[in-house]
Length: 249
Ligand SMILES: [Zn+2]
Image 1: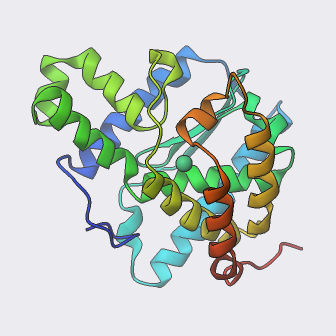
Image 2 (image 1 turned 60 degrees about the horizontal axis):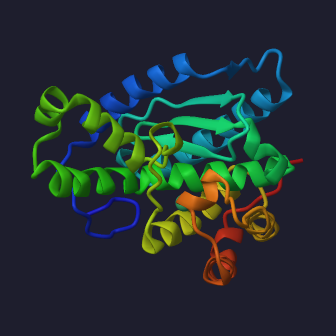
């Protein structure tokens, strides 16, 4: 059962194994992309700041409730890559990337926190692990991750990237399920609020993101399909999220 959501999930892979794989895939990704330094880029400094605030706030919160195991093994890293792509993601263990192409849609730090909170919620709710487990069953005949990695390394790595919403590099986009989206919205709002960012910014942000769609929807919209249902659910989750919100001075 998932510690965060309480939902039963298919889980054939140890979280610790996925965190190890995440750390190595993250390193490879950063080596192959143009990473901005937070010393010289205001955008990268903003991503760092939002990431530190969210990760500190949720760590403190779950520790104080005696539920620190929800974030077991997390070693947070936040990086900004210079890319036109409209995207952001979080690998297991807290390895986050924001693409600069996302920033014209977020437009402000609060909306960036909404997106990062949402991506972190996908990871903490183990949605990627769930998809990776399904992929191992459906595409590799229920192979254990370790075996799959040694026998089918390329395919296994591609399945991993796809499971965490990193599709464009391998030309395969896999949308999150509606249930996963709903959970990521619900907890993402709470995570942003805990970090001192107004969760109500989620509504105008998703309106802007939806408007950015059309014939050639950005990567982020392909993996996070948006419609009226999302906006309605966000409104529904808002009163709960607001209980966690104290504005920063
Ligand atoms: Zn999502």
